[in-house]
Image (cartoon, rainbow, N blue to C red):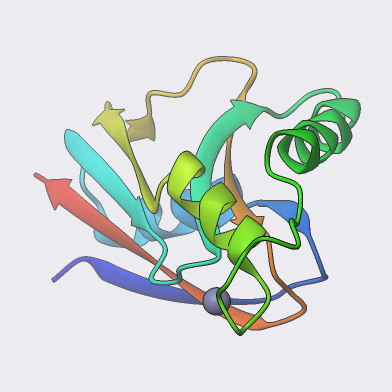
Length: 132
Ligand code: ZN
């Protein structure tokens, strides 16, 4: 109950602002007080909360992640995407946001992002709304 499934067609590597989709799930649930869990069931993608105002933040985020987790010839994983697995574990597969007065309790500058580290792919994420 109150579990919502979404799909995304992603580009190679990007952040997708999914805040409006989470809000759609919250509206459908009619929950006024509780929590939203946003979960990504993939091993080379993740969910994060970050600034939604300046698009350069996303550009810099991806630049920084590639500096922190470059592809390395020493990696043994035959799929060739170990750097994407590292980024996914660093970011994490889920976020939890408090719901109060029927709204997500996000800060003014916060947005919820689906992070693609190994696209293009068709991706899924789930939103579970808990509360009453
Ligand atoms: Zn892999």
